[in-house]
Length: 244
Image 1 (cartoon, rainbow, N blue to C red):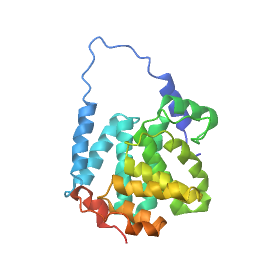
Image 2 (image 1 turned 135 degrees about the horizontal axis):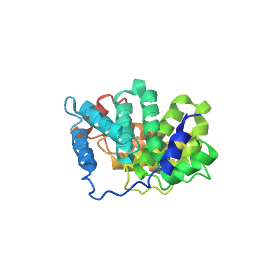
Image 3 (image 1 turned 90 degrees about the vertical axis):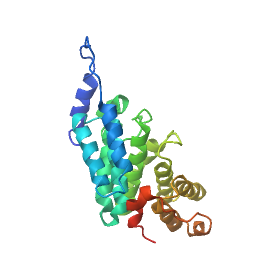
Image 4 (image 1 turned 45 degrees about the horizontal axis):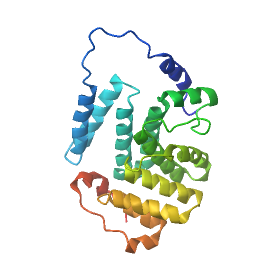
């Protein structure tokens, strides 16, 4: 089972939450710590910046293992590693998928569904209540793994549709559009919609060469219509290993 032992942990999660109220609530600085880690992430193109962000997010996850705000950020970091280390893309897709799925599974209604039907995020499990960034990155990493592993992993594509359903367009737009486009390419359906989605990913992140390369690989005719890759310094690491 992909999430071995997850059901027991989720059962505890569902039963927890009715604790005693504190007379004097403590000030929660967790959000401030996440913001500080985000500042490290913003400096990731500087020497040691990415590793510093990873350490900061990992420390926060140790404090709150089901914190969606941290889980999706670590999954995002794994997504960047995919671009930076293409030879280890499968490893980073696996890491990113598990982090994002932990976030999705921590949502009570998802947890309840998993306890009933098992570890597949397919109907009747409803995932639309899970944090949108977690769903976007889970879908993208799953698509990346299916592409790498071939037809034998195609069953996992069943989860991508529910994960992408009703995602707000402003949430991780490049990642969401890339996942939607490649999902359709893998299923060999709606080529015009796939083409539009991959072009949208480029438009959403014009400074990231990965999305342009991916779009042109799937639809070579896009090469003449898409803008050239920019040199946004924020994406220097991700662009450093860009392949033609």
